[in-house]
Length: 313
Image (cartoon, rainbow, N blue to C red; front, side, top):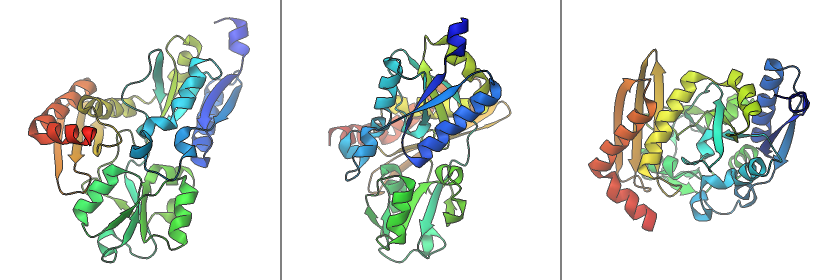
């Protein structure tokens, strides 16, 4: 690494939401701690996913809309790295880009936030529940078919305001984002994965860079959490083999204990009328193989036809 490249500030592309900026600044702080001689700057960008708030993600093209502009900044070298919530990152990355590091996972569960009820089962009959996620919608309707699901987009503060204004009886957000923003007190209940299996990569912050950027890759080595990476790789392999999209209610959650990995996966009808769950365990040394094996079992059990129908709907 030349003296010139070593002295140049690293630029981190990030979305402009309060949570995204917190995550990017957190990564910047970790880099500064590990490499006190390196200056770090943020490059806040507006993404299509942030700009369009009146339609569901499925209707406007999927979660990848939150990261396209950030990846473009990497590709044209305006930025050296980009910070993502890994649940927003599609299974296949553009050629020449890679997830160089992931931070230790925080609580992967979904958070129920209500205007009064203490548990999901305590919500009144026909309660209005806000979510933008077909995964959450399917599982919550399976548990409570009477719920009225309303599309809820926007950043964390915007979603909380709709609940506080009385427009909704409850909303569901990721525990991780609330914890990172110091909003843990807003969580009414943490939903057990048996009720709402988390999204692939939920609770994981990932850092993307160019594969040929050896400086960034070297800098990020100190930040990578191997256990989180192993779990995430299993989840992403499961979803990638299923070929899921935002139109597909897919969930996966992996846990690593010593040298063993346990992965639970789910595919569901959007209306919650049918849920297909399965679990696999094996060596943590082969997370992608386990993810693909579980996906094959789920496809053989009926998910193939469902996913094909959802893709062509």
